[in-house]
Amino acid sequence: MAYIDTNESIPALTISSLNKMYQAREKITSLTAYDASFATLFDQIGIDIILVGDSLGNVIQGHTTTLPVLIEDMIYHTHCVSKNLRRSYLISDMPFASYAEPSQALKNAALLMQAGAKMIKLEGGAWLAPTVENLVRQGIPVCAHLGLLPQSVNTLGGFKVQGKSSSQAEQMLKEAKILESAGAQMLVLEAIPSSLGKAITENISIPTIGIGAGAECSGQVLVMHDALGAFPGRQPKFVKNFLATTGTIDKAIELYITEVKSGAFPAPEHCFSS
Ligand code: KIV
Image (cartoon, rainbow, N blue to C red; front, side, top):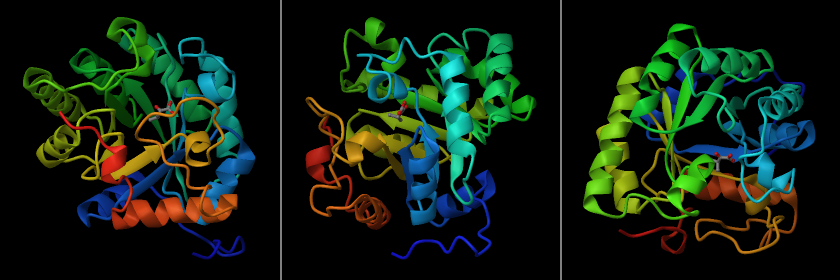
């Protein structure tokens, strides 16, 4: 895959062009980024969505959870990442406890949009419907996030696979439909059985972006440090180090794109069963 010629005018991806990819069943590629250099590189190589994840609490700030991440941190990194993007669509995470009420969510989401985000992402289910409705009414596109919710690690009792029982799976599917009806235009699914990732993807009409949610999702996302084998310690099952066999960062990202687009990633060894 060739680099995008920086002199050439490349149309920026929008929610409409991402929806066209979704309708055409073209897999959507996404990676996190937290600074201008990596974001620009990923953009030039052809990553569709760059996510300024609150995983920056882990990989940039060195915390064991995402809970210490502040809205100010997200604004700063969103500014950095948005600087030179030409094609990639930029989503920013709302951090822990920054969207407890619709009015608080609007204030904080607006700051992320003003920093350059094109969409914001929130973790949680049906309880967020009024917040999603309010944000969308105010012109702020929303990506919902179901399954393993890292901001809820203390109520979940650890970083565990979610939706394994049939009642949990039914509940998650119900919540996905509620969030879609509230106006969410994308849905991240994290650490759930592949069968549930498939069922949710087939039963809603917005793109699902999986991370440990099976190969049937509309697209895939990874934390960039995981995709490049740059995070020390034990890795979740859904992680693949694309640098290990390629040797350079640009070739690793090209391989990630190729494998997601072809459906080769995630392979069965990166997936969970119920
Ligand atoms: O914060 C993050 O990086 C995320 C992805 C893991 C989906 O939410």
